[in-house]
Length: 277
Image 1: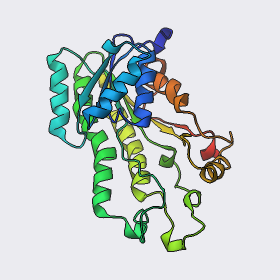
Image 2 (image 1 turned 180 degrees about the vertical axis):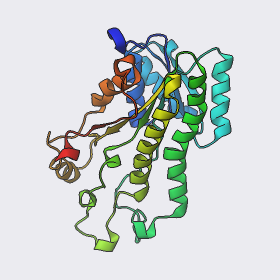
Image 3 (image 1 turned 60 degrees about the vertical axis):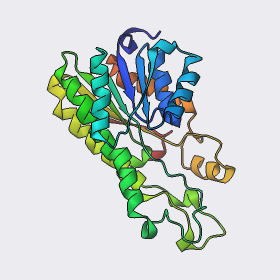
């Protein structure tokens, strides 16, 4: 159990996109501080697997799973009403849900990740999950926090691409013509930058009711990417390496606890120094 102001015993944290790579890590970080966590995602299968994985290290009674579609306000309200009926207050909201399009260059004859060819339906889908979803969850759960005596915390998970543009050279394939090169899609940068605007807005909107909002912008995480990509990326990072999966735990614990009680409206960029080089 952590000491002092990092202690989250008695607090309930709801995490969106909890079955994903980072969602599981955020849950582990908050469980380590004694919080009860509500894991939400679209499919029950992913949630069950995530709970089973976390329950190997943390008490299963502190892990609740709940299907929720962040793009549907009625569904988000349904989850809130469920917990109100259980006399459970959501004290911490981690807006983590996102569609992270992987750049693999296998898009066929016409690379659809490129701006010229990017499908409108993909724009709508990715924005609805990553940005509209964060707005809806903040609107529903944040409003309830503002009505409580104890306020609450909203943490938006952004990206280092909230502060600089993607370096498309990272994804370049030597056997492709320029117009066929895969790129990081425009949606990811727009969504993650938009989350910073949402963070600033929310930080001032409910401040008098004790609701704080900050953002965390992680850099690249090593998950077995190919050597060429890793070499290209690490050459841009002063620490000369990508992050490990658990290296954002302490930042999440800080931002979601009273240890950061006087921090509000900030974007914490943890990218090994890439954004300052």
